Image (tube, rainbow, N blue to C red):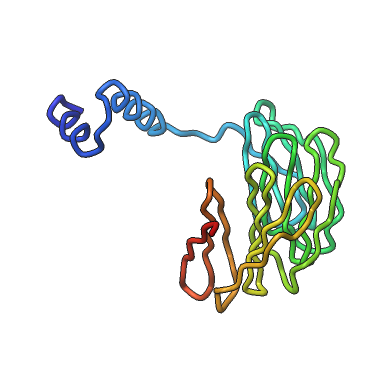
Amino acid sequence: MNILQLNNLQSKYKLPKNLLRKILEYTKSWENTTILKNLSGHTSWVNSVVILGDIIVSGSHDNTIKIWTVRDGKCLKTLTGHNYSVSSVAILGDIIVSGSADTTIKIWTVRDGECLKTLTCHNDWVNSVAISGDIILSGSHDSTIKIWTVRDGECLKTLSGHINWVNSVAISGDFIVSGSDDRTIKIWTKN
């Protein structure tokens, strides 16, 4: 990248040149990407993966969740307890959250793989879960989003507004975002 291109980007994004240079170097570092490890162990397709530090968590149609290490690709634990496909996993610190076609959400510990709680309130397949602080979100085939607490597993609120399956949920600060088979994305916020 020449100095003119750098100046144009700096003007466009209003970033200091040294920060922009670091971002561009980081981006360029991904140009030569290779497979580091090939992790296998699930007996059916993998629906969801997340990574946090040296930990990878996967959820599979084989009804299990696996905890892996990035460093050596070793499967540390296999978590069982869902009665049907694990469609979504999320991780924050020592907590894993899983959503399943069995209509439940489970809260697990990374450390020992213990299932701390099973949350039941959806009427259909749980497609997506997200976690932030003490809040868990779940999106379901029942067209709703539910807001739960990690601490006690209480369902704080059910958000209705989609007219078809909720396929994806995310949370950032005071905002919740959901995507649905109804072809819409909804942005929710606290009142």
